[in-house]
Length: 74
Image 1 (spheres, rainbow, N blue to C red):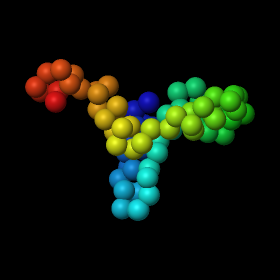
Image 2: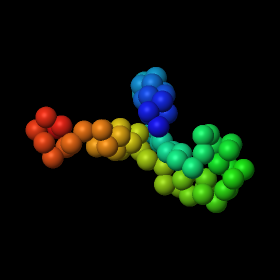
Image 3: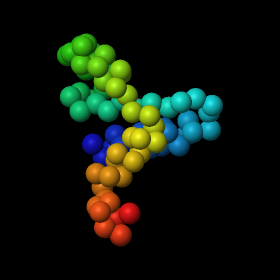
C-alpha cells in the first residue's frame, strides 16, 4: 500500500549510505513478516528467495504510478 511504499522509500534512503546490497520483500498477503510466517511459512520463504534488488523495486513502484509509455510519464 501507499504507506508501506513510503516507509520503504525512507528506509532505502537512510540505508543507501551503507555499503550493502539492499533487497526489498513485498508483502501483499500480510501486514508484516511475522503475520505472514505464521500464516504461510513457505510463501515467506518464496518471497525472501525472490526479493527485489532495491533499484529494481524503486523502478517497479514508479512503473505502477506513471505511464512510462508517454513522454510526461517518463
